[in-house]
Amino acid sequence: MDVSGYFVLGIVILAAVTLFMGAKIVPQGFEWTVQRFGRYRTTLKPGLGIIVPYVDSVGRKINMMEQVLEVPSQEVITRDNAVIRVDGIVFFQVLDAVRAAYEVNNLEYAILNLTTTNIRTVLGSMDLDESLSKRDVINSKLLGVVDEATHPWGVKVTRIEIKDITPPMDLVEAMARQMKAERDKRAAILEAEGLRQAAILKAEGEKQAAVLEAEGRRESAFKDAEARERLAEAEAKATHMVSRAIEAGGVQAVNYFVAQKYVDALRSIGIAPNQKIIFMPMEVSGVLGSLGGIAELAKAALAPEPKKP
Image (cartoon, rainbow, N blue to C red; front, side):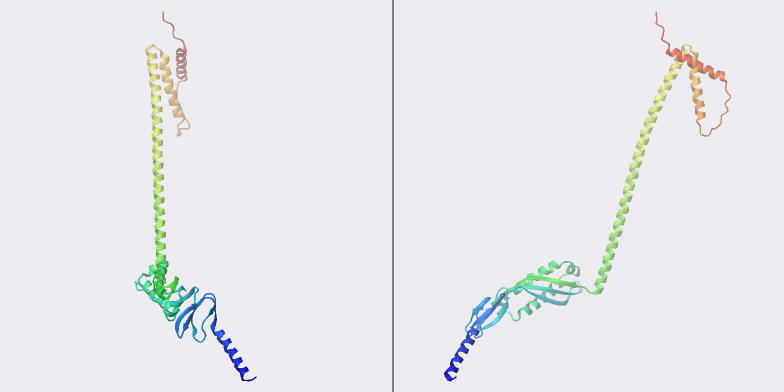
């Protein structure tokens, strides 16, 4: 091969190298910045891009997808001087490749340090109890502060999550004892409340029983009084009839009255629980006479009255 052949081969190789340097393939989810003599000129989007060889060069390759950055564990002092260990994660996405490339040096390192300092600021303004129970508040405050600070860098912080908050072991043991004491206190209160309610219900039941018993006694007294009243009325009526019979000269009425009292007395003696055998000296003829008088009185009461002339 002569000199002209070598020259043509060199031209072909130079053209191929120039074409290769001028064509750039950008993967999906990335944007590349193009610099001309060290100064930003344009941005290449995903796909095939053309630059001027030997003049233009690729500056920064920016990842435009949402990324996760882990915040390492660190010690934080709360407002009530409790030392806790905190770690977390940050989700962010680059929206402007140019500002992310040229407004800050080492973007991930800057976001990490900004998040770390703001975690200390936010938790340092809260008590231990608040820091353990209000993670949503902590996440919201951190998100607002960090997102505003990273906005000039062309970055959108989408979420900041506190993964774990670990208090010292002595505080954990103290909290466990406090929780146990609170549970014991609630149990004692509930037990006392139950005993109080049971006593109230028992007293109410006894009160209702006493009221019902009193009502029953009153009703029984009314019935007994009514029965005694009717018995008295019957006795009075019987006495009146006997008196009229005596006034009319009826000896049988007197015998009836005496025989009735006599029979009632015998019945009372007979049904007494402390009496088993009774010896009673009495005249049978007297009892028979009394019974005869009762029979005569009954006949006289049933006989029709004679008509007056």
